[in-house]
Amino acid sequence: MAPKKPNGRKVVRSKRRKFQIEIVNVADLKPHPRNYVEHPDDQVEHIVQSIRQHGIYRNIIIARDGTILAGHGVVMAAKKEGMTKVPVVRLNVKSDSPAALKVLTGDNELRHLAEINDRELADLLKEIKDSDEVGLLGTGYDEMMLANLVLITRTEEEIGDLDAAAAWVGLPEYEPGEKFKQIIIRFRNEADRDNFMKKFKKEFSFTRHSNTYSAWWPPKDRQDFKALRFEG
Image 1 (cartoon, rainbow, N blue to C red):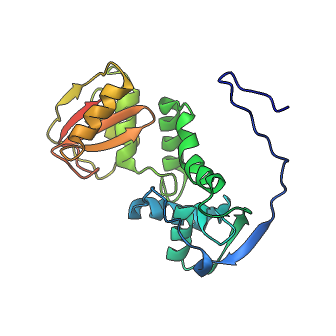
Image 2: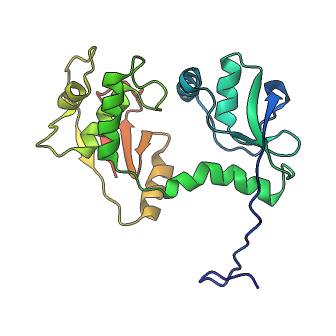
Image 3: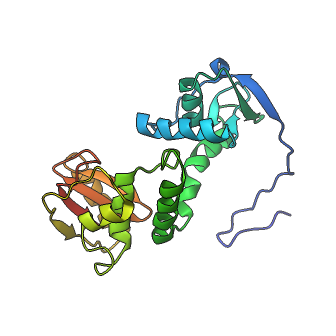
């Protein structure tokens, strides 16, 4: 009899499978029609740089018919880089089966259960920026995103304002200008926070760093620091 979890559901375990990597034509891969994650150009550029430096080191997962279950962004970057073949792992599942949909969602969502030490992340990104010839390209961050991260992970005694954060990061083009106004919003629970986000998502530009959200009003490009900033 299969063991049960505390909620009474059975724990389903399958035999460990040995996956074989296939090399397939990029043109034969199809995006999943129910993929709900968009990959904007700036993210794809980071993936392209990662491929240029290291190749494709994370397998693309596909269903039996070649539908992508995990790795949509990697495939987009591979096409942009002009690659015609990529390594994949093909699962013996139909693309619309529950098992396939679980891979699709799990690849995107399981990482949210991780706990990130944003302070150590900022230190790591700063080290990369100072030592790698292409800087932060390939990490998912740029210098201005790092400046924001530094600002919310340091005390006021360490980093007093955005000017100090920009100097810590080492932004050569940054010129101190108008000071922004900062308001801290704290919520009683996640539901209140999510309701706020839904209500004002058209009025504010939101970014997320781990469990901390930053919002700009009026909506601004990420490179504009002269806006009102909320954290919650």
